Image (tube, rainbow, N blue to C red; front, side):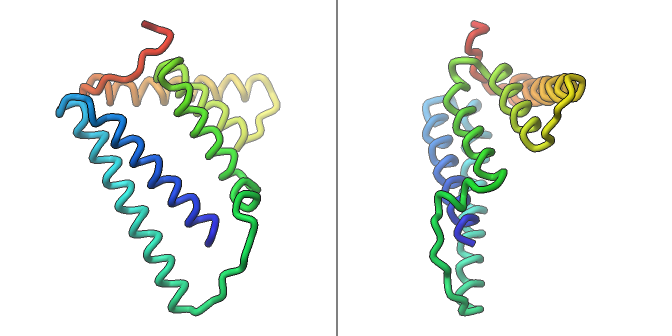
Length: 151
């Protein structure tokens, strides 16, 4: 419960940062990212409230845990670290390079691939997924994505 609420608060924080970052763009470029951030923050806030109400109704005692250790004890902690790293390197490396790295590294961690062929398949898949989202956001939604080292 505590880890879920902490992760939800982190998601709200990320959506607020995302909303503030796209505020300076034109209306057509900022509309979709702002809507995603607002919807994400709203749904996460509702989820937090439902969890709290459910907890109060059941009248269960909240065990005191070490939040930081509990949060990073499993795969969710590594995912959070990779997301933060992705946010940091996105502007410098650009959307394509940083997204391939993010999806590839997260997939490698989750799957724990040991053979070079598996690693190659994961990074090819990461590249294809990144190109798919690049096409959707850049060409269909007309949203400028960070170019990074390409420009």
